[in-house]
Image 1 (cartoon, rainbow, N blue to C red):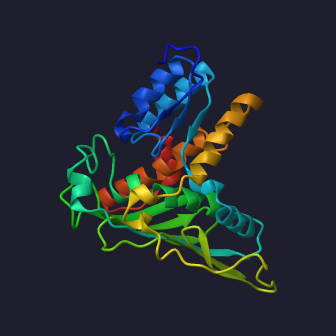
Image 2: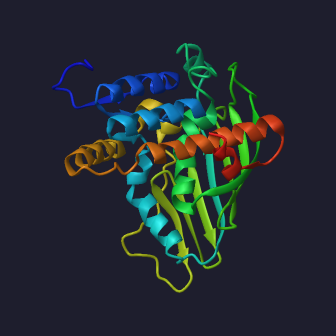
Length: 291
């Protein structure tokens, strides 16, 4: 397949631990790449992907489909334009349910070698990506990571206190062990406003001196079964992301979520894991400088 000149791009949807080797092979053969999250699971693997894509001038799009959501981007604009005032808190709560069979029947989920992590690296990475996308870079993290209810090698529950470079603080909470599982929730609080989301639906839009936009209606994703059934996740964001990769090839530009963007949430998760292991805060600039 990689030798076929009629194939311009490949999609890598394998267990996470194989992403790096396959991406290197694809890029070496000049194929553009869509790679599922996480882009890779170690610093060395991330470096290998970035280096080979630059060397062979191929485009890579690291799947982070929530960045194509209208509600996410409207929230980002409101936060980064200062409409919420000084940002005080940015929080993400991800309380999912994955059964013992989900882990036991796969041969790779919940393993250090092929999953790279648990509730954060596999399920929580989308929410973690959005927190930096909206709030800006994280300065430091202090975390607890535990395996409480599943017979796996990695965490099924984690909580991290984060400090953003802006000075704001927040909480990132992830688990795959709470029944029946709940939609992910985002909260953004500033000195002049608050925006809350439940998955792709606004649950609060309150900004001092502004009327709630007429086209914003509050909703709930309480019936969203993706919290417990990954096969029910919408593909709309994926379609938009693949379209962006195609456009980036035609227009000879970087994809919206290239290898450098794909690296960011993985670095943050790895820093959370280090903090959970050492019991100490981790400075993100220092942590990233080790790569």
